[in-house]
Image (cartoon, rainbow over all chains, first blue to last red):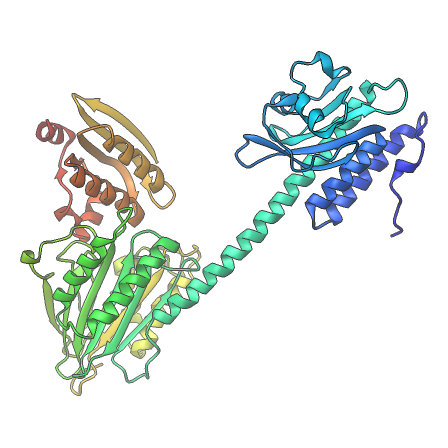
Amino acid sequence: MAEQKPSQNRLPEGGNRVLDHLELAAVMGRDFAASLDIEDSLRRAVEHITRHLDAAGGALFLLDESGDHLRCHACFGATEITGLVLKSDEGIVGRCVQTNCAEMVRDVTRDRDFQKSVDEQTGYTTRSILCAPMSVKDRRIGAIELINKLGGDGTFSDADLHLLQALSSVAALAVINARMAEALVEQERLRRELELAAEIQRSLLPRRRPESFPVHGAYHPARIVSGDFYDFFPLDDGRICFNLGDVSGKGLNAALLMAKTASLYRCLGKTVHEPGRLLALLNGEICETATRGMFVTMVGGVYDPETGIVRLANAGHEPPLFHDRQGDFTPLPAEAPPLGILSLPAADGDFPETELRLDGGTLYVFTDGVTEGYADDGAPLEVEGLKALIRKNDSLTLAGRVDAVISCLKQGAEALRDDVTMLAIEDRRKGGNG
Amino acid sequence: MIHRIKDENGVTVVAFEGDVDLESSPEARRILLDCLGRTSSLLVDLSAVTYIDSSGIASLVESFQNARKAGRHFALVAVSGSVLSVLRLSRLDKVFTIYDTLEDGLARAG
């Protein structure tokens, strides 16, 4: 496409004048669309407008974020006032923004809102002003002001006023578009940061163990970052320390509390082998820095693969399900409230513990995202659905059964509303049917 | 979620209606904390709450914690079945003061 020269060098006459105006609007629009630098485009727009309307000078003011001040972002001609800041109702330009009406002031000395101080600073004498608000519907952006008509009788005409109004609208739209584009870039930057946070979160999860390992976990976040977590690691005596938790709420605040809780557990879990004691210590730590009522529901425990015995404590978490070797399910309800709510005095001791003999069975610990999720047939899974799903996949390995539950929810017709996380412990001793 | 606030002889009663979830819980939080700043006794009527998620519970927990620190009375009243089962399952029924009916709550709060 051939580049067209702006129209300022041509003399508009008669019917050509309308075409000329349209051409200017088109040049400005094209300039805004092609430019990556909005400030630069605004400077060129002010130049085009000032020349086209045959004014001695032009200036473009934008409201700041608070809407309290107007700042000159671009000017052309008689005076250089870029950077000048006025109160949003100061001067004729302020009045124009406040009333959202274009104005023509033929003799500024008769207008009480005229700010003499600007002329005093620049040494230039303003006689007449033409000013139009930059706004789209009720959204006010700023205004464009022209001073001192050069040609004709030295005063602006109604036609000038209408043209400035039209051109100000074009500029206002361009500013709004540029701001939206900026917001998109910022959104993209935040998304990348969230993805980095998600990567760190994933690094807090335990590494995948061989099939022979009796504990397996899986999770799938509903958003980029998650408030769910699980972990398991072998202790020196051969037992396995495990946990699974769910932080209230979602998003970055939940993810940060998740990171704190998971790290504390991993650190304390290496030396404190009594789950009730460990949860009490964690509770104290989380209560010390708890904000906004955030809390953590958690199941923490120790499994001894030699004896098949699990000792666990449940702080306000969805009841884990024990699937025994006969095929029956037993829920293990919480016996204490979630962590981070009530700081209990040391005298009140540890969180209550439950001892469970797996005896050839499997223990499933999961977040409410599992039971409140939607299965691949579109129906809410609920506890009964989860039991049926586990039964259905009974012939699969431990990892296969856990992964089957997660993928069933992932493929549900409804988008995941909550993170889904599951951990399972299987009795692998000879004589057990696991 | 919609809410109503009324004064019963110096006891402020906030009643929520509908879902208190991730979307509406910031508003529930603001309403509760705002009320706690103006009253010495706050009852939260949850009889018409159809669903509450963990972010909604967190709003109640924060109000409970603030009330405790400030020495104010804070209780839940007429808790709907679905909310009560969440509170029971997570053993939060041990944390909050809960009255079966608004009348019970008012009688004990006065």
